[in-house]
Image (cartoon, rainbow, N blue to C red):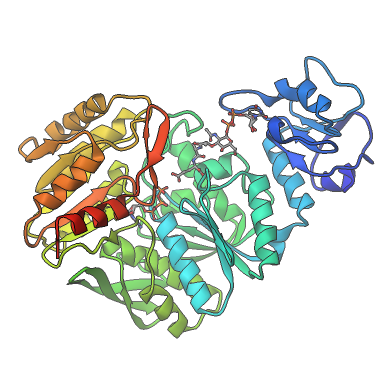
Length: 492
Ligand SMILES: CC(=O)N[C@H]1[C@@H](OP(=O)(O)OP(=O)(O)OC[C@H]2O[C@@H](n3ccc(=O)[nH]c3=O)[C@H](O)[C@@H]2O)O[C@H](CO)[C@@H](O)[C@@H]1O[C@H](C)C(=O)N[C@@H](C)C(=O)N[C@H](CCC(=O)O)C(=O)O
Ligand SMILES: Nc1ncnc2c1ncn2[C@@H]1O[C@H](COP(=O)(O)OP(=O)(O)OP(=O)(O)O)[C@@H](O)[C@H]1O
C-alpha cells in the first residue's frame, strides 16, 4: 500500500522522502521491523522508540513516523512527522487493514467493574440471537477458530484492527470489546466509531501508577470519551457518576438500573442457591417486560445482565435469544463455581481491588452462608492503597480470612500481607485469620478446614494461569489445583 493511502485522515508533515513510498506492513516495536515496513516511533512509559530510528533503517524500514525531531535522520527512508504517534498508529492501522470496524457491529464496554462479565453476557446474547460475534478483553480474544490470551484488556490499535479483519475473515458480523480508560487515553481505539457503547459503573481505580491516570476526574473523563464515539450509549443510570461522565456525549442514550427510572429496570430480585449453583432471578420492566434467570449471583449480575438485555434489544435480538444467552453464561474466573463438595461452595473470582471485593463479598453475604471464608492476597509493585482497601473490606465482610500471595512480582509476600493487615485493623480487627504465604498451601488449607454450609471465595487471580514471583511466571491454574486436591483428599 502507498504511504499516502495509509495516511488518509491524518494531519502530518512530510519531513523527507515521498508519499508514494510502498509500505509492506506497520510496526511499533523495532524488533519486528522487516524490509519495506513503516515504523511508528512512540514515546512510551519506559522508553522512547525514536531512539531506534537508525536501527530500523538498517533493518530496511521504508518509512518512519515520528512525533518529535530525531537526533540523527537516517538517509533513504521516508520520514513523516505527526502530532501524536499513537493516534497515527491507530489511523494507519485502520487504513492498512481496510477499516474493518466499519463492516462489523461494534460494541464497546467501559466502566471500572463488570466489563469482562458484561462483554461475555453480550457475546452470549448476540450469538444466541444468530449473530457471529467476536470478543476482546481481559480474558483474551475469541472468534470462530481462535481463542488466545492478550497482554492488554484493550489491545494496541494495530493488534485490534488486525483482530477485526481476522474476525471478518472468519465470518463474524459483530464484535464486543472491553474499552479500558487507558485504551481510550492511549489511542488504542482511535478511529473506531462504535455502534453501541456501554457504561457499567465507576469507582476510583487505575490512578497514580505508571501509565495510569493522574486523578479520578481524569479517569472519569477518559471513560466518558466512549460516549462521543458511539451511536447509542447504554448506561447504568444508578451510578452516581453517570451524568458527569456523560457530559458532552454525542450519542443517543438508553438507560438501565434498579433504583432510578430507566428504560430497562430490574425489580423483584430473588437469590437462587442450590448445590454448586449460585444465581439470581428478576423482572425487567420499562421498554421490556420479562422474567430473567441468570446463572451468576447477586445484584451486580443483575446490572450486568440489564446492560446485555438493553444492548440485545437495541440491536434487535429476540426475547428468547436473550433468555438463552443469559441462562448459559459462564465467564472464566468471574464468580466461577468449582464443584468440589455438596457440603460447601467454592468459587474463584477476579476481584482484586477494594471495589471488586466489596461488591463480590456483599453479594455473597446476601446468600447467608454459614461462614463466608475469603482467601486472597494482593499484587506486588502495585498501589499499597489496594492492599489496605482489600484488607479493610474483607475483614468487614468475611467470617474468616486466609491471607496469602497474589502476584508478588518483585515485592516480598510478607510486606504485602503486612499492608493487608493494616487494612484489617481499620476494618474489623477482630476477624479471625491465618497467614499462609504459599497460595497452593492456602488452597489446601481452605479445603481441609471447610465446614458444612461454607462459602469459600478464592479471589484475586480469576482467569489467570500463572503466579508471578520475582518477575518469574510459573503455571498456576487455580481451578484445576482446587479440583485436583479435592479429589486427592476424597471430597464428595
Ligand atoms: C503503561 C502502559 O499502559 N503501557 C502500555 C504501552 O507500553 P509503553 O508505552 O509503556 O511501552 P514502552 O516499554 O515505554 O515502549 C515504548 C515503545 O517502544 C517500543 N520498543 C520497545 C523496545 C524495543 O526494543 N523496541 C521498541 O520499538 C515499544 O513497542 C513501544 O511502542 O503500550 C503497550 C503496547 O500497547 C502496552 O502493552 C503497555 O501496556 C502495559 C503492559 C500495561 O500494563 N498497561 C496497563 C496500564 C493497561 O493498559 N491496562 C488497561 C486496563 C486493564 C484493566 O481494565 O484492568 C488495559 O487495557 O490493558
Ligand atoms: N457490575 C459490577 N459491579 C461491581 N462489581 C462487579 C460487577 N460485575 C462484576 N463485578 C465484580 O468484579 C469482578 C471483576 O469483574 P469483571 O472482570 O467483569 O470486571 P472488569 O471491569 O473487567 O474488571 P477488571 O478491569 O478488573 O478486569 C467480578 O469477578 C465481580 O466480583
